[in-house]
Amino acid sequence: MSAGTAPAPGAAPARIPVMIPWLGEEEAQAAAEAVLSGWVAQGPRVAAFERAFAERVGAEHGIAVSSCTTALHLALIALELGPGDEVIVPSLSFIATANAVRYVGAHPVFADVEEATGNLTPETVDAVRTPRTKAVLAVHQGGVPADVHALRAACADWGVPLVEDAACGIGATVGGKSVGHGALLAAWSFHPRKVITTGEGGMVTTDDAEWAERLRRLREHGMNVSAAQRHASSKPVAEAYLEVGYNYRMTDIQAAVGLVQLGKLDEIVSRRRELAARYAQLLAGIPGLRPVRDPGHGEGNFQSYWVLLTEEFPVGRDELLAVLAGAGISARRGIMASHLEPAYAGHGAAALPVTERLSRDSLILPLFHTMTRDQQDRVVAVVRGRAGG
Image (cartoon, rainbow, N blue to C red; front, side, top):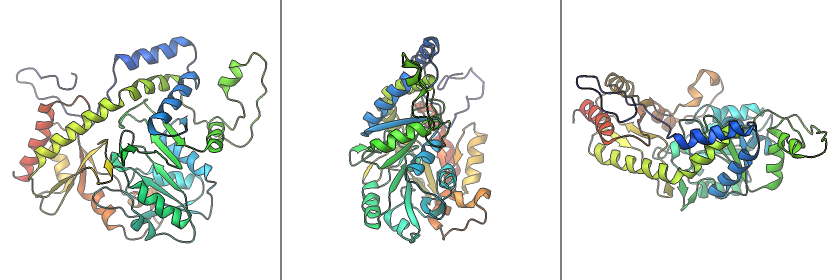
């Protein structure tokens, strides 16, 4: 049954998913054309997607890779971080943010976030900064843009680079410009839970030509000549491997889908913001419930629509999730607190009260492009009913 299809008389309402990527015939045709072209590995469609994506976010270069995690890894390699170096990260993030720091042998230092946005601020970063701090890795959490102008200014004063984890950020803006505009290095995700998708996949954007050239080599085993360049040459090409690299490539099939999705971005973000505004209206006045909203410095894409439960709400987050699940509604816990996960047991962290509160007391409500008014009304009715409203 497709999203929004009415059930048969007497049947239970269809389950409402937390997210459905907006994919259709155009993406299927683009993928099929890539398959039929005979070139399915990293090739001309990847190059076209890189150019289009970089132009969209206002960057000079795009380097397509296999995931946002690999994008973060390469970004940190570009900064030549390693053992003994500290990188400040939010604990309130998918665990890949911190893991990427460990991939290069550096030490992730967890900072707290502000409650309104779930993002780092200069103050929360400064609270854990030490002489060993060699970079800051800020996240645009759930599509809520971080105040990168303030963070960039602070990092410049401290003499440390700022990397942006923009996994959720495409289509969000800061000061009227795309998230990632002017970033030293930004990493992006095209996972199906994100605003646009290639199934799996990621991107690094930067204005630095030397970094871009090196990262293109590193994603392809460190080769000085790409496979596409070798095949395009009319003469035999003997490639050299300039350093130890990785297999972090994106396929042309994925890029073909990405080009179609990128063309839909404005429509997708507009629809998500419309649904978010309706949620805010419908949820208004429920005691103990605080929905996510735009920050003063920008506009979000509402990649996730999360709500925070305060002490006034009559039940806890987990009980509300169970009630929603029982009503056929797939909601999710809020963003994890990475420092509390078993993978970071014994790692050590400063007190992170806001992070722990947001992770414990927030949940993500369903929001997707094809969501109907009836589906949204069902979600709100369950929440309001459990709130006693």
